[in-house]
Length: 103
Image (cartoon, rainbow, N blue to C red):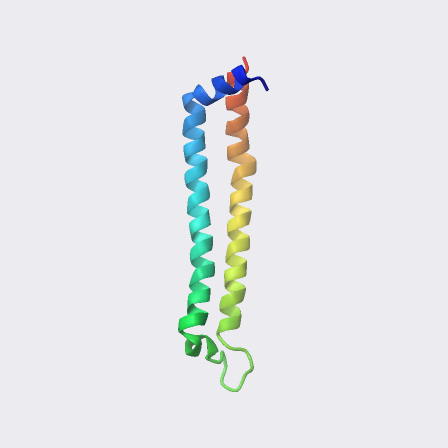
């Protein structure tokens, strides 16, 4: 890609709108993951008795195990949602902008 083409793409208002939308979405998804992980770590650090509660009296499994698994599953689901949107909507928009700019 030539510097001239890159300049045309960057000057395209659709490209600028696309970049803002993609960045906003990425930041929101990142914040959700950070909240999930740091929330769990803060629970471990400051509320061990809560996490140590047994799921069923006399069982070995504490409440911390399913919450930890939930954090992992939550981040896997968020990643899947992001990848699905990136591979469909974002890739389609980027291709359309590139096609428009190279004409």
